Length: 143
Image (cartoon, rainbow, N blue to C red; front, side, top):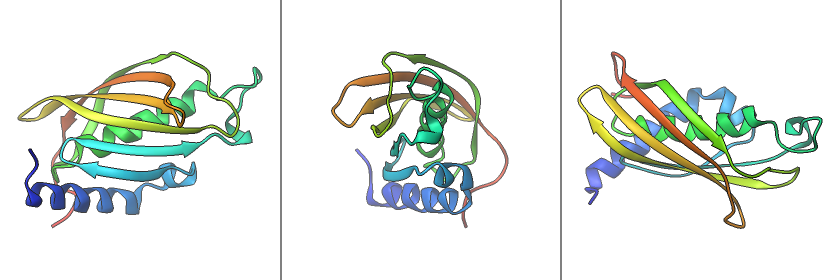
């Protein structure tokens, strides 16, 4: 169970990250929710994201999942970076779809952690599954 202080730290960490995250904002991502070890981001698929097959390029789906992993793993005011990841693209995302990426902490100890992200359509269909391994770097996000 999250304490009020832990939730406040997660929100402050997210605000500090969001202020400098030009890539996520530039792609139209929205930070929907954040808490200790968890984050939800969303993004609408635009014409610029659709490939020659008429579906969203997998790189954009990866970027959304990576961002959800980043906000979840940085929610303790400890700077974390992605060390390795794997994504499985399960179903196509199409023009106009709103994708929702939910990142959750699976394991965290000292300087490393494992985070899972499920990317779904707004209707709830699973589009992709992502697993990221993160490690800390020096510094904090605020304070």
